[in-house]
Image (cartoon, rainbow, N blue to C red):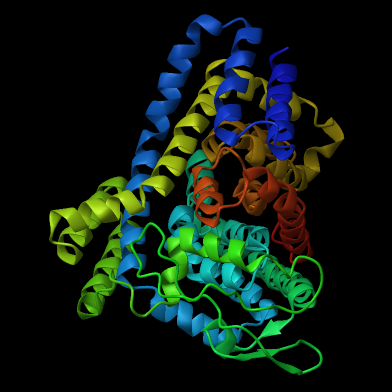
Length: 487
């Protein structure tokens, strides 16, 4: 009964948010509360929620102060050179921009933290996607899938959990998996190419000058030049910009969706402070403090990787120091905090709502029951192929469960079943990593709410777009692992 209710609860949640019948926050709270009553443990709902909130509170604190920190770094211009550098490399070509998104997400993922990766990637790429009217779902999907492949790094979490659960060395698990993971990452880049090609066909190719407010537009495939209205450079937005942009939007070429009402587009840009990333005159810039902010960020990420202090504490200290040095006057500090309050509230609210979902899943025993049902359903004849079975199971299980639940609850059982048929625990551990590209878009992963929240993408839209591509990426990694004899 618990198994049926567990799957029903997850299915109900996914269907309602993808059909946009409920907001993610409401669904994360109300649906598990209702199913908790169905299980007959409604009286313990409060205990489950408090336990879930307690488990996720450090994550929520980390996200709150990380958003403030990186928001401040955007305000003061730390990422302006990155945005401009990517823009020059991409030449305002949607194809290159999508590939650039995948490359940037993969590189930044080396720090091992998904939330940080998404903050930096969205901060750098969002102005380009918004300016060129590209699909923001493409950005979130590519970033999440690339980060999912890189999430298997030994310091990223899953590999360390697998090593701990099975008492193995993390290096022995990860190093042999590198060729298969590289194949998965290559597929993400190929996928980015085709998604970018689709965007190019839909929108055409703008010249670099056009994006920066000049007069030339280049139509993809024809090389034709047209005179266009000057683009809106800056929106006043919440960050207090000067609003000196013009009220006309540049025309784009291509298929459906490339033309929008100029006034509406201008209003939208004025409301979104992040489009000021290309404005060299915004009042929040601190060019004299650029190297201080750069060194502070490098030091913060280094301390995080070396685990000198808990991540929430590091971001709390970093945000406080960055705010004090860059904006020494109290009114300016209040203005900066207010400017980023919307993102902070959305993301932290989503994390605490997810705590209700995970708390009920764990507390009622639904997760354990679901995992046991799946493991018990494995035919005995599949024993010699338990590594392959583990690889396939890692896709749904890491999507519907937390990494802790899968690696500490399910993986030891799978490893024990494999050992009875002569399958090495190392093979089981490696196979357990292949589901991470899909896991990074799970509704149980707090970082995904940072991604969709900062990109202003509906979680349901992101889910519908990314699940199929992330699942294919996982299966390609599994296939490469089998082909190379790793799994």
